[in-house]
Length: 338
Image (cartoon, rainbow, N blue to C red; front, side, top):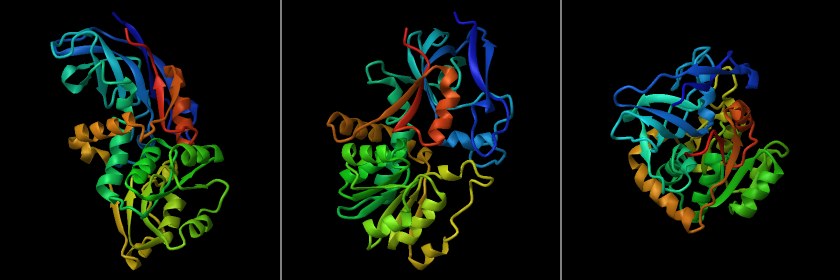
């Protein structure tokens, strides 16, 4: 039986840039699970860009997290004590909000069981979870690339972006991606098949787009918002399509919900803009996961993970992810199965 565990709480409201000092590790004494409840040992947790949104004082899709409260996010764990026939001890489970802690007690009905033979369990926090469903929805259901079209993906080396570029290539599109280092650019072009790369830190994105797509862009899968989104709006062909996935470049600004200054250009060019949220596609998760799994097994889709170990490393992993240090999905490993 586990009596003492650890969790990470918000110590203070972050300034413009996340610091590890914004978080605090605290101990917690757990009781015993009640009827219908289970005690879970977390094995993996996810850090994702959206988590930055509830740390500030703006209330949007995610309510502002009070100071002193434990952070939330996706996690995969193993049941170590059960008072539920649905989830016996030894079961593997995924939760959407019980990350940032080593153990927790929760009603069994709030958790989803995972088969032990379903592949690496952490994939359900990435390619078989929020990440994969987001990329699949944006490419297959929103943009719907046609062979020969040109697709631009910002934040192309991140978790969602790295899947989106590959799905675009599989659909027959020519893909241009941005990332913040030449090393990531080599990975995108040499391993993931991206046709052209722009280093947004060292190159002029607008000038490079004019060189790489002189006739304009057919599609944009936007992960970052801000200046890159404005540049791509100007670079769009008439009747182009934009899928708005996120705005990570703005998450540490005073108003992360601010729109592009050149929005009127979308009227002039008859551009279609669709904001989308993976939550609206979870009813299709089984079919999406099945197709992504087949693509991985066939070698047509590469899934990359950046892994750090230990709950104490979670704030660093989170800050690094927001700063673009990861290739693919950033994960924190918390333990081993029993």
